Amino acid sequence: MRFDRLKIISGNAHRGLAAEICDRLFIELGDAKISQFADGESYIQIKENVRGADVFVIQPTCNPVNNHVMELLLIIDALRRSSADRITAVLPYFGYARQDRKDRPRVPISARVVASLLERSGCDRILALDLHAAQIQGFFDIPVDHLFATPVMMDHFRQHPVDDLTVVSPDAGGVERARAFAKRVNAPLAIIDKRRDEPNVAEIMNIIGSVEGRNCILIDDLIDTAGTLVKGADALISQGAKSVMACATHGVLSGEAVERIEKSQIRQVVLTNSIPVRPEAQASSKIKVLSVAPLLARAIQSIHGETSISILFE
Image (cartoon, rainbow, N blue to C red; front, side):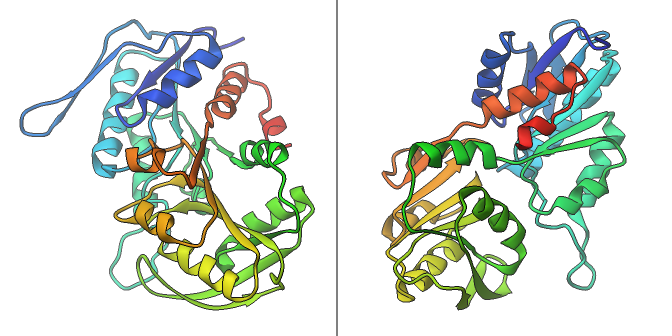
């Protein structure tokens, strides 16, 4: 094996997930000091020898996004200057992923900028989970392993099967994701046609496909304000759906998202711990959180051992 020294380093974004991954790999979490000066600047010091090591940095770039992005860049730079042999940024959640195109005059392609910064800081490889758009992989000129949380979700629904199931995409852009899930559970597919006039505001238009008398699962990559989710559930119920559940990898849950879910007609929301779950979400009877630590640990093990990770997609 070329990389015989596996190290896991965590930023401050999600140390709990990093600890879970280390438990799965039977290794200790790497020793790094990550703090802030009084003026808000980040301070990074790697507290152990990483010379010649194969280092994986666990850091979802979630809220506060800019702090966690900068922290990740500085950790990578510190590792490069400490002569780590290979540095892989593990991004359970990739912030700025929704800014992946120039959709208005005089706006940046922010996802491309972040990708460039990661490369310039010295990152050798990216391990990402459920990118908002798969084409973001093309923003990088280094290898990208793109995982999906579908196996984690499938395990959950095998243990908790749903009768008369219809899988629903909340918009046209998510059809491929929803179709893949529907194929795995052998269920029909429906699509919600909506128009988004402003960021984080969605207007439900109509439903393509039959949902009358069906138990519906809305499939998406993330839930932010939950406005789209709640309106989608209302539209499905109005068309005769028996019940509505939702399933998403990333529980961003900004603002009043949890309160909206609690007051909605949604029976259950299934998320993963790609992002630290807010206390009010943990306390919610409607929100179920699944761990992606086993999935990420297996991917890290495969990359370190230079074996294929394609088995993780089966």
